[in-house]
Amino acid sequence: MGRAARNVHGKAILYADRETQAMRLAVEETNRRREKQAAYNEENGITPQSIVKSIDTVLSSVFEQDYYGVPEVAEEASPYAGPEELAEEIGRLEREMRQAAEELNFEEAAALRDRIKLLREQLVKS
Image 1 (cartoon, rainbow, N blue to C red):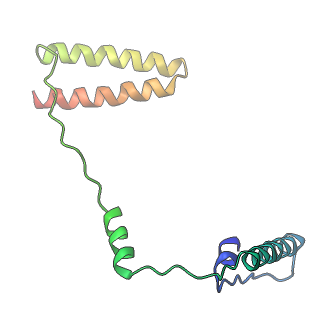
Image 2 (image 1 turned 120 degrees about the horizontal axis):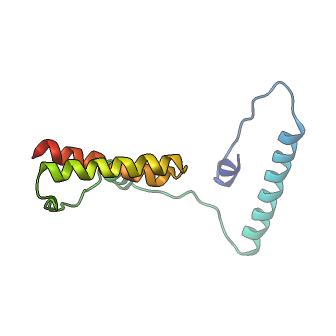
C-alpha cells in the first residue's frame, strides 16, 4: 500500500469482509503521509512525475541479471604424495568432522564435510 501511495497515480485496493482497525489505521497513515507530501511539494514548487525509462534499459538490466561470470582459476596441484596419503587425510578429516558434530560445532563439521567431498573427487581422479 505504501509503494502504491507514492506513485503519481497510485491506488491500493484492499479486499476484506469488513474493515478492521489495522486497515483503518493503515489508510489513515497513508492519507496523512500523502497530505504531508502534497504540502511539501506545494511549498517547494514540485510537480510529481512518474519516471520514464526506455524499454531497452529495462530489458538489458533484466538480461544482465540472468548471467554471472565465474572467474577462471587454475586447479591447485595436489599436496598429497599418492592415493594412500589422500585416503589417510580423508579418514583424519572424517574423524575431525564427527568430533565437531558431537561438540555441536556444525559450521566446522559442514566445512570439513565439503573438504572431504573435494578430496574424494581428487581420489577418484587419481
